[in-house]
Image (cartoon, rainbow, N blue to C red; front, side):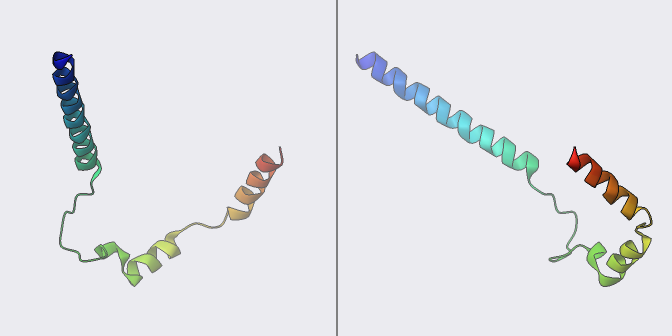
Length: 75
């Protein structure tokens, strides 16, 4: 009986270590990596760059795409 209790504690300890290791691997592999000192916003979030992106966006076929979406939803 005493042996089973010690074995149980060993198994619980190993499981706890594996859970912590899995969490650390997950957290470290998906954590964002900062490449520079940009403060809160990266340099591409300036008003000029956003305005340039909006002006470069092609909205000419938007009505056709919306009608295609409506047809698919109606099915």
